[in-house]
Length: 116
Length: 116
View 1 (tube, rainbow over the protein chains, first blue to last red):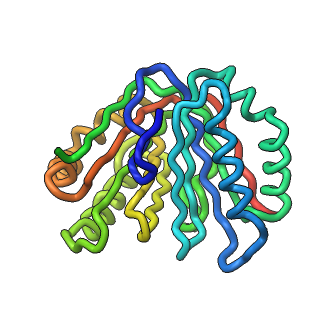
View 2 (cartoon, helix red, strand yellow; view 1 turned 30 degrees about the horizontal axis):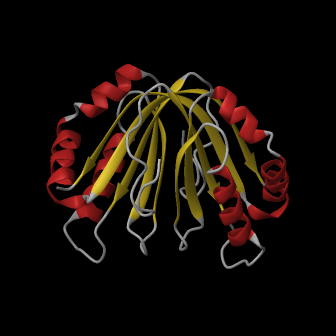
């Protein structure tokens, strides 16, 4: 599962689950978000069924997309209910995000490309 | 389907299909990518079954994620085979991307949040 941190998570073998989290952050606000987001991302990598994660935010617009890949629905639910993660989500609604949407999806096919 | 351009695509009613495209661009290269990507994104919005799209790239790392939402698999295939889009994908492998991965997934649930 490990790859150079800048590279996209490679193609995986379906079926697996993608959790797509798209969010809008207020601009120019230091509210503890960066450190918390990094801690939660690190915690995710230690959870059962974790397959990979890609996360990007454009600092100019505040829009970010994080996609986490999990082995199955059970892993997604366990991560949803994980204590620190659940507490972080409360903060997210309380102050970190102006808006977000989440889509949970079963991946049916995947491919990748790396320049030779 | 329209929403303020900075806001995440809102939750939609499952089932629908998410196409997750994660890519790494070389840094500091002006190779016609930005104009082409904008044109292709505009073209996507005119295709049958298009539901929405979110796209973010971090200019500091070159990593980007685009998620497009489609009504069904038929819409995904039609867009894959659309002429200008197929031509752009050839350019992508030839010069625009150092690496990418693509995951096609059926969305099973979705929710969203907007600060009141």
